[in-house]
Image (cartoon, rainbow, N blue to C red; front, side, top):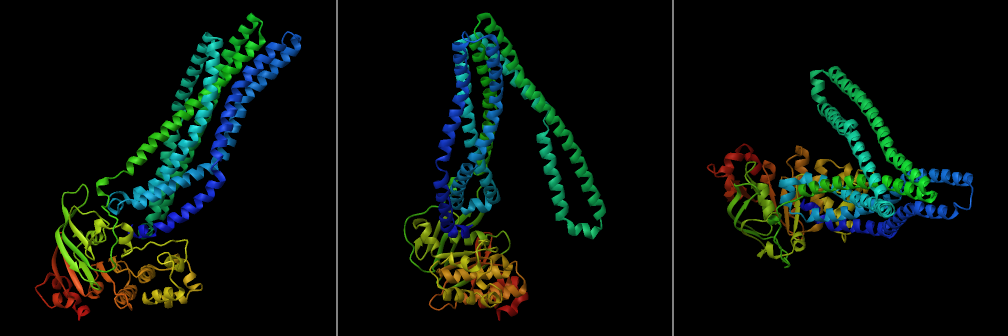
Length: 590
């Protein structure tokens, strides 16, 4: 995670550049779309009102046949408004897609920056994968809330206007129309709940995908047991069951949709009949047009108001759930100052104690040590004894509960994070690279001012140059073309290029074959031979060859240093714990 932090400046720069281009194209789109959609809502409200006024003015001037034609034309226009509304909704959604993506990009930038600023202890020990996987869902959820709120508000304009005019024009009629609409909506909800199998269908789809993935992950076991036919038969049976269930579920969905459309028509038919009686009694055709138009507007837009309100409420609940997943204890935030760290590789720890959150056991307890400039220190110990924790505390990746970490005599809590990172390069077991960039580009991110000669020298020191020159594109090859051992050496080449006074590594050759280990270890030794630059190299390790390459060994047990000395001193003492651990590899230390 520290590696990402080192590279965050370039990442944020790239994102800002992309966002600035998107903003120029889409920053006014939301405002214009919002205005146009509200205008459509008002226009839809005005159609029955204006039509009623016009018909009232002309009804005495025309005979019955013409008025009948006007009414038929009105019914066609009024019924078409709902379909036009649905069509424009699709158009609106497509038009707003660039803006939604823009919002998503903007939120992603903010989330990424927050993630990069999150204390590594949170990412490594509480919820690293959860935080990273949640960011995308969270951003999409927020942008969807924004879009659905726009759609809700525009329908609300038409709905409120229709209700107000109906109440003013004929309160009893408005009440009946409102009750009919509520009953219809209640029936729709019941129909959906009764017939919808969407949730169960999705659950079965996920289960089926998980089962297929599980079989694929166990291909070796399947071949060993020779049960291919049984597995294929099982998958086919599950696929057939899912297909039939999906077919039946979709039929029920179609039936539900038909019933919902029916119930949407019922209140309009009832109120249209009542409006027609009212118009006959009063002799006012305009009144008929006004009432039927407003009821139609109220029913169609009212259903939209409830529908989008439900979606927003659901998205808000999802948003709260996602944000809860990303919360962490802010007491873990690193204490930092604004001071500048003098260049140098001296490390001192005084009475350090550290406990992980929600744990009672101290991983490090009252630990003290001093490391001089240019030392090559191996920290050894059994798994769980605190090796990785110790090297993370050294670089102030974790905030300690007790004690003091000093680099070049300065308390790390009093210097800026930027200054601290300029003095330390961290390399873990699985170095991270930009997959879409070339080998050269990955190196230059760590030192943009480096010349081609310096890049080649760094690769040479990392024992990687000869292998890269054999590739067709050389250092312009994609980083994905490298093996695990080559990537580890590329990480060392970045360290050579940065030339920081302190280099910290976590088991740099633990997962490599013997040939790759030999080359990486040679590169690590080269770090101490750099002309004019002799960094302090500190690594946690249980690999004998790595330990033998150090000039000082620290044995860690239960959060404390129980042995400290040169390899020669510790391996010549048959009573030392280090000797007992490594005596089978005594030849490596001679």
